[in-house]
Structures are given as structure tokens and as C-alpha cells.
Length: 264
Image 1 (cartoon, rainbow, N blue to C red):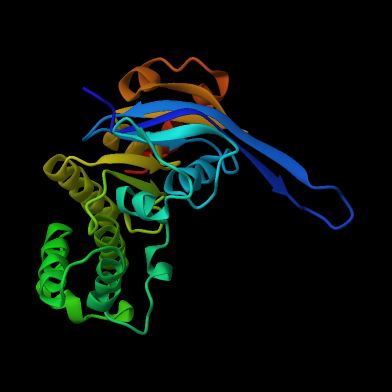
Image 2 (cartoon, rainbow, N blue to C red; image 1 turned 90 degrees about the horizontal axis):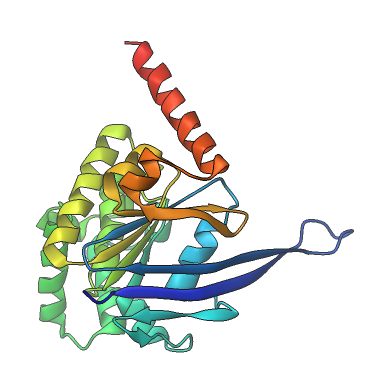
């Protein structure tokens, strides 16, 4: 099976200005290497500031790595080729509602994405929007809803619909469930897994919630200060972590879980 997404020796230098009185610090992400097949999910985890979001931005073309390459189905994605990148690798942000214009309807938001990126006519766009809304667990009527008329979970489903509507090969999700209620979070996780199997997309999933990471991913990569400190099949990494930081992350997570259930 050939990889849908392949990242080779990706390196990004990020300069952080913390004070006008001090020189900028340089944060180096990488080198990053991984392969991802259709219907597979790679989870990226690690402490805040480890480089997870920088990697996500590199994958979707928001920032340009200084070194390395990103390949889709064996073909290198040129950094200047914005149209190809936007179609084939799409991003879902943590707070989906802030990316939704409150002054326009859900239908208008999705219609704009199709109008700018496809040659579909108005009727074809409306059919495509309706089909996509239904796939993410919304109703046809949500076409006419504004942001304030939707729950947090529904707003995140609209964000998922906008990412899916151009039929991408890869979706990058940056902490997409962090702001959701636990029950809604569980429903959304299962929805994404169902969609992934139906449509064959690959997912790059960023989260510090190790319970979700374990449930949703096939592979996991642990980052620290821009470096990959551990990577492998999810079941193997969780069963026998090798790096001391990975062990501490897992111990901290499962200690919190144990304390939670001790209350009942």
C-alpha cells in the first residue's frame, strides 16, 4: 500500500520575540519523518510548545518549512501550489466557531468554499453542501442557520463539513475536541472515525488527551521542544513507552483517570 501522505526530513525554523530587550529565540521543529495511509490516523501529542501546531501549519501550507518535503500519493507538494494544497490537505481548528462568520449562514460559508475552489454551478453546490451536512450528522435545515443558532458540537461539525467539502485526501485536526463537552466529544470522535472509514481519508490528529489519542489513532508521535522523542504504532507506544518524558506523560494521564473513577 502506497502512502497517501509522506513527510521527509521536514525542518522549520521559528523565531520567537519574547521581549524588546532580548534577541529573538529560535525554535527548530524537526526533522520530522512519517508515512500515513488511507483510513489511518496519526496522533501528535506532547506538552504545550512542543511544536505540534507548527507541524500542522506546515502540512497545510500556512507556513513554509526551510527543509524537507511533503508528498501526496507519491508526488511532492510544491509550497507555492496553494490550490492543490488547499484541496488535498485541510485543517480543522480547536475553536471552530471562531472561524465561522457570525453574519452569514452555514450554507453561505460552505458555498463560498465551493465557489472559490470548484467549477460547480449553483445547484450542484447546493446539492454538495446538503450531502456534506448530512454526512457530518447535521440536518438539511442547518443550511439556513447562523453560528449563534448552533451548539458547540454543531459548530465543530460545520468546521468538519467545511474541511471535508472539497474531498481532501488528508485532514489535519488541531485539538478539535478540546472545547467540547465530554458527551458531545465522544459523539464527534465516533463520527470522525465513521467518516474516515467511509471516505478513506487520512487524519493527522493533534491532542493532549491521551484517552482520545489511544482511541482514535493507529500511530502516535510524541514531540518535545520540536523533536520527535518517540513514534510508533499506538498500541505499542502505550503498552511500552521508551522515552522518559513519554512515560511521565502517560503516568500523569492515567493517574488523573484513576483519581476521577475513585470518586464514584
